[in-house]
Length: 148
Image (cartoon, rainbow, N blue to C red):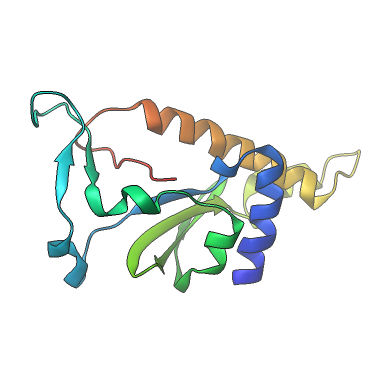
C-alpha cells in the first residue's frame, strides 16, 4: 500500500502537492495532549477556525512524508476518492487520495484515445485539488480543517 500511495503522490505532485488531503484526527491518548487555540483576533468565537497548536510545525506534506505513514488502514471509498486511516509522527490522521478502482479512473481508461493510468490519475486528482481549495475556504464548526 505504501508503494501505491508513494507512486500516487508523485503523480499528484505533477498537478500539486495538495492532491492528497490529510486531516488530523484527535483520539486516544494524544487527544488530551493537544491544545487548541483560536486563530481569530479577540479570542475564540463560534466562527473562529480552530487549529491544533502542536501540529503547526507538522503540516507540510510531501512524498517523503507519505513514506513515514504507518498503520495504514482503508476506511472508505467513493466515486472518485479513497480514504485511509493511519499514523504520521505519532498522530492519527486520515489520508484522502484517488480511488484507483473508482468510476472516474475506469471511465477515463475506457475512453477511445486510451489514456494512460497516469493521465487518468491526474484528472481524478484534479477533483481532489478542487475539493481541497473549497475546504480551505469553509469556516463552519462541522467541517474539519484541512492540514497540509
